[in-house]
Image 1 (cartoon, chains in turn red, yellow):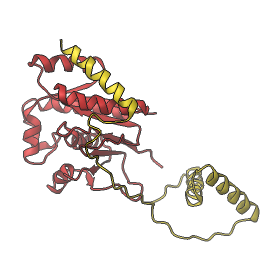
Image 2: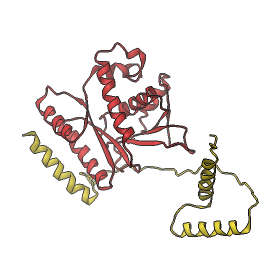
Image 3: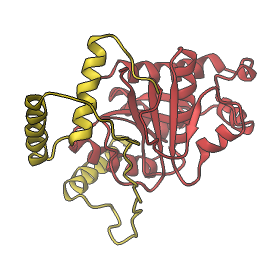
Image 4: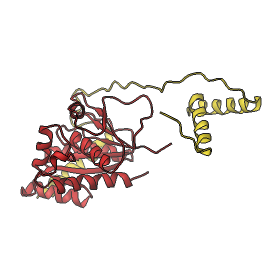
Length: 194
Length: 92
């Protein structure tokens, strides 16, 4: 029986990029020849909306499947305000670099750390030209966080419910850099094991 | 200067994590309605020797005592090992 990699995209703060990461990591996994499955755990159903738009080459389920899914990687897209640390080992925590966003992230991070979770931090929507954000980005980079800068690529993709790996996005400005960043995060996820 | 606030937030979060509380402990918390579902199973009868049956009963009893796997899960584990040995993959 094949091993299924399970990851949770989690941060109780809303608007940090959980669903964006869930669907784009799944798309990166698909590009790599893996079979991803996204399990949307959010009543807002952002990942579900992407799936219903019909552009995703992988499945998004609205709840945990009853039977073992035929997938290589299962990505749980958690909802905002969820303070329960996910039960699986590997957590991906996106955050924006402003202080109030960081405060919630570090609260949740500390809880997960106490439970021995492996946490991959992603700084999303950062604007390095802003001194205060740059300091936070630098600090988190030193802590091995991945950085996805603020970019029009994501809003352009979301306007058509696409992932950034969709061929329609091939000519978007700095698309290669954005894809590379997501691919790097996926690589870190795939090599991680308990 | 920024690092000062990061240190402040880190210290606050570390203390908070120890208590298990949130910053606003009086705010209503999201309660998840987690439905625990088990996979669909059917009864399958097989003929086995009594000594194997008794050994399996003993194993399931011991697992039950330590709140380990139950009989259907243990049987599935045994079948999976068997399938692996003979290079067969379960469908679905």
